[in-house]
Length: 341
Image (cartoon, rainbow, N blue to C red; front, side, top):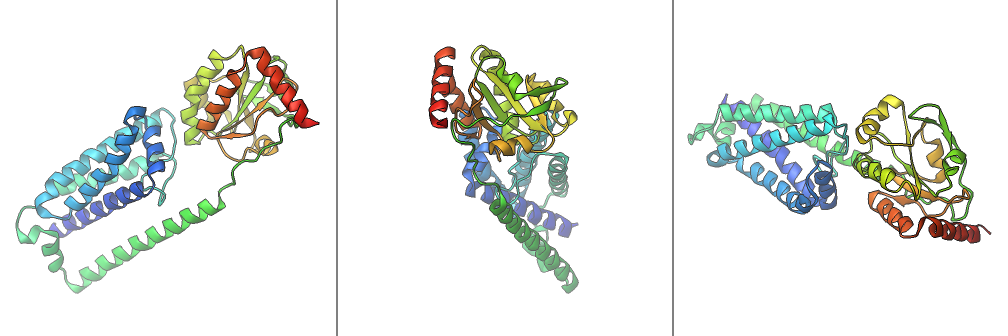
């Protein structure tokens, strides 16, 4: 039993150690993940810094018998917080990247993420139940010293597998990063916006001409139902569509089925949601990342560069709303017309 407890302590120490180090090496990604999990904006910088430090402290404490009890209690508390946070986000339909192990391993939230954290928590409960005391035989070094050659071979085999998995994940992450789509270029200002006719989430079909028939500039936002930043932005888009309906039309172009988009649309009461089969319309506009937005003026011409990411989309909206509904539209049309000549 001491051997199992010692191995679990080593495993949990490794998990928390890798998690802490990788989060510190990717502070921007850590801040984005903390924010996506619902931490209030004023607390995001502090939590992003404190969390990996706590994880590293837990990792170190688990290796020493006299601090293992406090460390395993802290590990269990942190893991339970993760379980609750993941459960709440999954219930709300949020599937942003967990950023659990920084850039080494980051995947959208899902039931595997929840199951993994529950498994770690059960391991912490087992260690806490068979808590080590101050006897030499219950220390990690004392327990390892008692292993026979076959147990050592088994242990070294497990360590080799873990190292191989970590190397594979790192190489896979680097490969995916190198294959990721380049920053969007988009169409030139003044170019004619590519026409489309797509299935509308509310029923029927909707075309570019119908969206422009309202006589207002059109803000197209390209999204997808599993994009973490998109899910966060949807809450703001709902307010934009309601508050600025007199100044411009805001339409979301997602892809997939109605069922795949149901949670995001229903929860945020989004209007003007259109569905591509894959990415056929996004490719015509050069929007190879999500979320990405572009402004189309009332003449059906491109009136802005592509705005990639939530911050750039907010800045584009601010620029559009900085003009009056009439004068702004005229200036955009004039600019687009000049560039188009």
